[in-house]
Image (cartoon, rainbow, N blue to C red):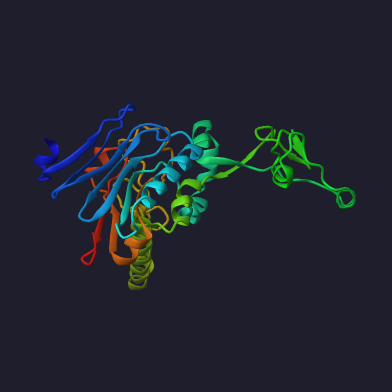
Length: 315
């Protein structure tokens, strides 16, 4: 009923066991290809065909990047199950950080924020291997004595990574035994899509917007002087970080949190919502994608809506 009130005559709703339901609504007919709400998916997905394109709506696990990586591989298998000629678009809350935003994460100190909380660490980070500290004498000894295969077998890969049942191999602690582990952001789920040639529509558009903002700011700075320049700088700073203002470059593309956020997992500005295009579709269609931020969307949800336009006249 709600979809029809918006003029969207066709709709599909998947009710999940988690309560975070998934749906698609359209003005043109929809053909349901598949829907799932079981393992390996925490919530599920809906895959439809609409307008000659395969559209997949999903919501990935909120608990760990390792779980989301398994979900990502399952979604990639769905995309490969049909001819690349039928373009594939994946949209939804992927609960994942993108390596394309790594520079912004570093500039904002996101790793420090995430690593200060156990829940955020578990959701977004991965422990890094402890450094192996050795001496020249150790190196000489290793050169003279072939490395032994750890108990339980495993060969060279086990010797390098501690597999095959050995507790410790050549100074590398077994998993979960590092006394004070260090962490880094786990980009693996998004990397799986990017490495498969998917195009991140939101990132492309946000980079263009950031460039336009930078050029506009430079022109504004050149047009004023003295006290006027100081006033303009204050206004730009308010726009970048003040309530109600559109964030400037560096924070302009975050999809969480909004003003009504109550999710402790949204403890910092992050981009978690995506529109990913398969390689064939990205090559043949123009795309524009942006996050809608205004007084209404600040209070509709704890995520800003991501709007995406595809122009595929020859598809």
